[in-house]
Image (cartoon, rainbow, N blue to C red; front, side, top):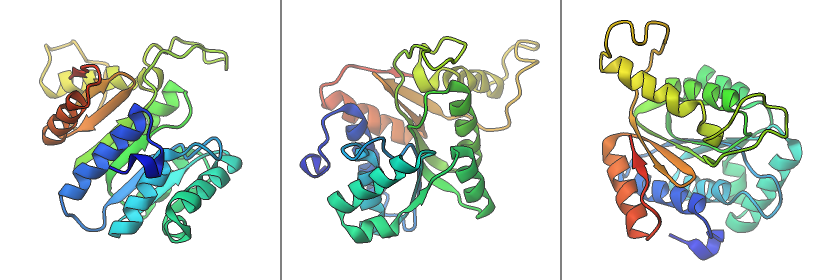
Length: 233
């Protein structure tokens, strides 16, 4: 794990690095990796550089989306500086709404191995992103969500955001789990979900979602790193 190369100083960079290690251990070809939220300044975008470098070095497919053109430009410059021009050229950079980028992937019949949700702090948009990603996710696919800390509402979002970007995603997955396990009749009569929910693990401000084999690996690595114990659902 090249912490110095990517300037990894916090959990999000470490979490992405763990997932890269896990994917690499599977020795699969042509993985499809998708990120929402490229960078918001020239000195940010560590995860984009990590994922772009991994995809370029191992022949995988990586795409990232940000709605702001200056964020995309900063992300490209970051990848070019850290990983080289070839890694930048190998990646696909979308500048549009995240749902439009996902629609494009759907039209191209792309199935995702790993998706990272780290865009804007709109819980309803984040839920829609998660729902679309799960429809494109491979059976053993993984989703990572950043910024689970409580977020105030200076931007006008009308409701509380106690779990940040996962404020609506967590209850949605839990309700889907209850539905899949045949909760008592009438309990979820108004809840609709068509996907088969996996389990998830929360560590401080990160949520990892995926198959149990991956979650065990991820949880064990987090514990060995000395960070606080998380919650496994």
